Every structure is written in C-alpha cells, then in structure tokens.
Length: 415
Image (tube, rainbow, N blue to C red; front, side):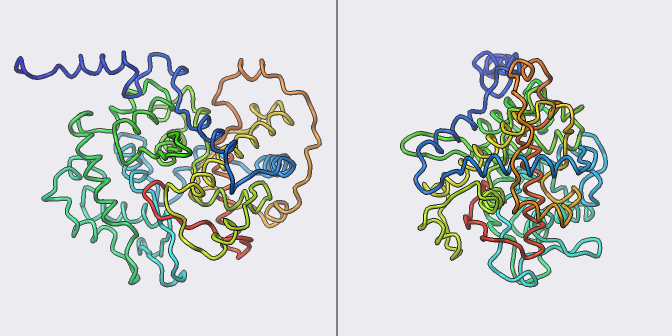
C-alpha cells in the first residue's frame, strides 16, 4: 500500500465511530426510523385513514389464524426454487434476489403476462425472478456474483435479456432499471466490501437495523426515501425484506442472526395495503378509492402513494400491539415464519372466510410492558410475521378471485 492510499481498516473504524455503515457498537442502539416516519405520515395523511375498531378486530382474526398454522423459518428452504445450501453462496443469491425484487405486476391477462419457464413449470410474479436466477445459474451465468455485475463487458443488457427471457411476448418490467441496480451494487460491493455482501453482514454486528441502514447508506438503489410535507421519510421496503429473508433462510442463526430483528417493520408494497383495506382497517378518500379501482397509475413518491405505504406500516404496528395487548403470552407461542412469497401453506377456506367476520378479541388481559422488555425481542410476534401472513393470504384471495379492490398501481424499483 502506498502512502497515498487510505487504510481500509482505519476507514472502517472511522465510519463506525461516526455511526456510518451500519456498524453500531451496540446493536440495540441502531434505529431505521421507518416506524417513526410512518407514524408521522399517518398523523398528517389526507387520503388514507385507519378504522380503530377494524384494526382491533383484524388483530384477533390474524392472531387466531396464525395460531392454526405451523409456520417456521425452516419452511423457507422447502420451496423448490429457494437455495438449499446454508453458506455464502446462499447469501449471494438472497442479495441478488432482493436487489431485483420489485415491480412484477402486469395489466395483461394471466396467460399473456411476463412468465419464466423453468423445471417444467410456469412462474410469474416474485417466483419468476427466483426461477430466472436459478435458470441462469444452471446455464453457468454468474448472475449472483457482484464482480460479474460490475463488469460492463460481461454483464450486458443482452445477457440480462437472456437471463429474463419470457415465455410470453411481455418482457420483465423495468429491465434497464434492473441492470442499473446490478451495476451499482456490483461497484459498491467490489470497491467497499471486498466483493461480498457477507462483509456487509459482518459490518452490521448482528443488528438488523444497522444492516438496513448500511444498505440505504451504501447502495442508492436501496435508499427507499421520499419527501412528505417537506420532511424526508424512510420506507426501506427492499432493504428490510432482505434482512428478513436472511433471518428466515438461516433460521435466525449464522448469517441470519440478528439481535434486534423486531425493529424491522412490515414491507411497504402494494399487497399489504390491499388486504388491510379488505379487512376494513385502511380507509380511502373517494378520489383515491376511485383511482385504485380504475387501475390508474399512482406516481412513485406522490403524496397518495406515500400515505398508502406508510399508513400500512403503522397499521401493522397497531395490529401487533393489539395482539400483544390481548395475548400477553404471544411471544411464547408464535415462532419465526417463512418468507412472504408463497412458501407457507395457504390459508384454509374457513380461514379466508374468517377475514370478513372480524370477531372481537375475547382476551382482555392487561399488557405488561416490563415483561415485554425483559423477553428476547426476536422470540415472538412481530411485524415481519404479520406481513408474511397477510401477503400469503392476499395472494390466496387473489387466486380464488376474492379481491374486493385491486392493488394500487405504482411502477418503481422500490417494490
């Protein structure tokens, strides 16, 4: 190393001392501010509101339905498309997966929409992404390797088109944006983290919040922020779901061990607002309701879009609090779950019907805040589990044709 070159270890120590790069000395001190920002948006929202009574009713319904399921982080690897190994190659796969995990919705019919053919099956939505990545690896294309992304002579647009070649006439949405995300992430990882996302995990010091912050600080394509009434608000959907996928894949151990996993909020996309509205929790103004039902595009970063996403985050937080209020033993009975992409068993018919009944909570035990603080944070119900459950349930309702309202249409790289 020449005298003009900076010592990388010294730079890392300096960044950590300044609270940069996610490397908090004490994992419990890191905060993403996502929940705080979501509450601010909710408090100042005009087009989206909450029904307190329906939030309470939905909390009881969700709790009872989750109690009937056997969710476990181990089910993450049970899906045939998810990687089976538990090593650094799986970390690379998950990072690539969530780096590109955005905007799969289509206005075309199910038969005409973008789809991937792999292992004799047809895959759409999120699973089309996972299938395309696995297919590329089978074809010896290093699609999960940061050094490959950073090499513009190898990772070209034509190669990416081949990776995401569709069995229909519709190509994957936002192909150029996906290429830019790969190039950017490849450069950052190769220049700042020795070419491996594993080093980002090490820098986070077992802190989910620190890792989310590191992603947002180091990778602009993970910096899911917007301006709302002159204030910057963080939503960080893909950064948070990346941490949750690591946690689920590795069963809260090894590369998925985070001491503050409950600091992760729900993942603000378009499916959770849809089911929260179906449950009666989310209320829309007539103009917004009409805009969604007519499937009109809601611009990314617009006031209405921010209100939809942020109020959903706050709503899930209130549901979580209500479950803990009604069921103080919730932390001892709910276990980590699978990812929100269909790996869990779909809800039974009677469970789906229960979503419209919203029976009130019958257990009115007093919530002991001190007991909650003393228990391990990652031992029970949290926003991640609720998000996973709601996502799977909404997808099942859609499959059965039981949607009461379409999901809102926003085209962006954030979700």
